[in-house]
Length: 158
Image (cartoon, rainbow, N blue to C red; front, side):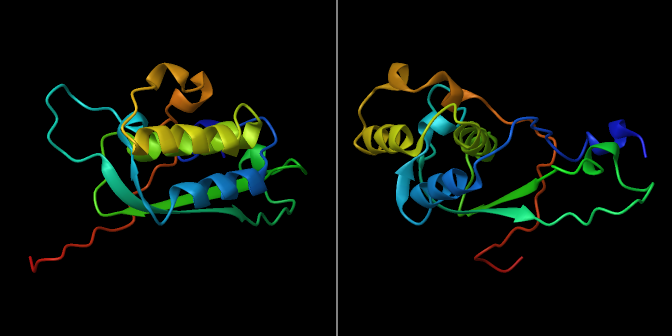
């Protein structure tokens, strides 16, 4: 199969990722209300509350390597890992999930660490204006490739 077909459905990261660090970062962001304004794109005068509670999971997806011509070329390599990052929230801000994924991958690549992420999250939770102190790697937005909306839940009948 053409690599161009698969490139629409996955973000290929060539560096080895530290799954443990990514899970630790996901746990830090999960379960409690945090100010996600720095992890989203907002318009001037935006009235939406950037404080959200998200639930994130990071898992490695097993790949069965066989001599199968239907597998894309990058899955045929012996050291291929596929990771699935899932998130749920009552309301996602614009590009919020893509920024979260970008941060998790940056931590997995070693471009940032959980301690620095903790400092950033705590500062924004206290409404401190410290955007200039956020590491550049934490401001990158993951590409939309591989982003999939699985379902939407409404609290009112439709």
